[in-house]
Each structure stands twice: as C-alpha cells, then as structure tokens.
Image (cartoon, rainbow, N blue to C red; front, side, top):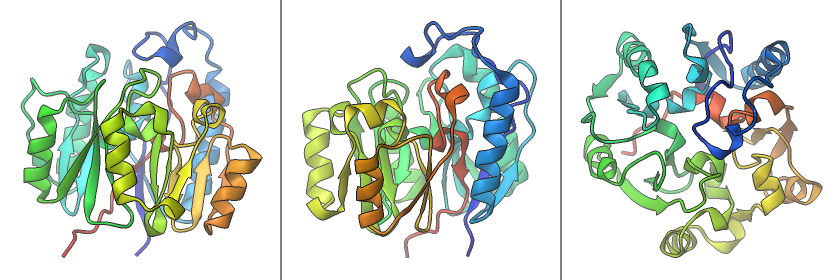
Length: 273
C-alpha cells in the first residue's frame, strides 16, 4: 500500500509573528514566490513515492501549510491539535473538519490541554509504540489521553531546547527501526529511554550543524528520505543504513521554524494487531 500524505499549499504563508526562536527577526523577509516553488518541488518529489492529498488553505492562517500539526493519526482514528500559541488556534476548526469529512474518528481533546499533532507524536518504525514529546508545545497531560484513545504504548520524551520545540524538529523514526535524532534536544531520562529501545547500530546521531539545518525534519517514504539539507557525513550514514537522500531547498519555511516533515502529515498508520 502506498503512503498517503496530507499537504496544504502555501497560498497564505507569511512570517508575521514570532512563536519559536527561528522566526525572530524574520518578519517580512519571506519570498512567497520562492516558498511556493519550494513547496511544489517537495510535493512533486514525494508524489513519486506516495499519494499526496491537498487540503484547502485559509486566508489569515499562514501556518496551516505545516500540516504535521493538524493532528496525529492511527488507523481510522485522529486526534486534532489544540495549539499552545493563540495565533494558530483558528486553524483547529479547519483541521477537525478535514478529519471528519475524510472518515476519521476524532477524539475531542480537552481544550485546556496543549497538543500539537504529529509534530510531537511519532510512530516508531520498528516497534509497536508512539514517541510523544512534551516540554514546549505539547503538555504531558495529553499523553494519557493519546495512549487511551489509540490503545498503543506511548513513550514520553522531554524537549529541553526551545529551538527544537516539537520532537519532529530533532527526532525522525525511519523505516526498519532506524532513528535519526539530535540527542542534546532531550533531557537525560529521555535519552536513556531512546537508547534503551533503539540499538546502537540503528541510531543515526545528528550533530548541531545538521540539526540547525533541520535534517531531522525529514519525510521518510520506504527507503527515501526527503530533507532540506544534510552534511556529507550524515548522507553517508543514511546511505550506509540503506536510505536514499533527496535534498530539497526549503529556506523560506526554515524562516518559520519548519521544514519537510512539518509540511506533511502521514495519513496511513496501520494498526498494530
């Protein structure tokens, strides 16, 4: 079965407010025509390997382009996001409507609980569990609700560097149980949890420079890894693990603190029998 991936065109994408450290000083610097070109290149590259579904962008909601934050999906169930930044809350109704209209059973998470979808909730690609972040945008209170609704083991991992405000900015589970990640983004206990579940030969450690270029914010389809930029040593490590790397310049989206993975949501997550 081909992967199915949700994307939203950047028709209304801007950087007009600051809700993460990457956005500071970038207000008004966006080249929208370049952003549209970059988004199309990413969409077309992914579409060679997966079915891309597009949802309609909405005026005055510049960050809807980052569909990873629409919600988290498992089987025919979805949990829509409840954003911590007030600027993104008007997106919620559009994402909820999309999930309902496309046949997902939706959990109505209590509006007092912060949860930012697949930005902070990722299936492991080797074992039957969810890696779920907290610390900046998703609250630990959401974890119990996610585990109950999806009926799947959940491993809580804590982010400690505000530049990596969602786990998908610094943590990328890959096909066959590999993991590409930037350890300093996590606290000690979380690093122990990661190391106790992912054997050394499956861990691909990403250094500071690559992490800052959003190498971990990658889209993985089969043996393909789509990302903004990776150093030669990181590309070599990925190739050694059996992956093919495709770099796509996403400079305009980095100004908003997002990259390839942020711009996508995987819609097919088969249920563990």
